[in-house]
Length: 140
Image (cartoon, rainbow, N blue to C red; front, side, top):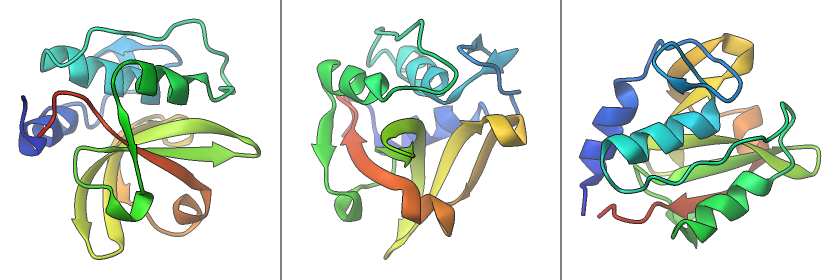
């Protein structure tokens, strides 16, 4: 098992890496790739999801569940859990929760519109778009 603090530290080590659709290294990464590479670096998963479109269809949520993730209530999500967001109908974005104080959460994610990995509060439109939270396997 890996501690939640270890997951967060690994995720933070990616801050500033540029966004690249389906990127899987420190030269470029997307939101799904960030989760995949954090899990690989900590030896808590080596599964990957490839071939998804630039406008994801939600298949990555099923992928994380098939990889052993456990869906939890958003309001019960903890640091190191994944937050999934929708745009229109399907989940299309994922971030890793880094902190929580009451209802306020912060997350790390690779964001196309900001062109990089960043850490920021989950406020405003993010709160309106969240659809699920998943606890990663191997994290305690």
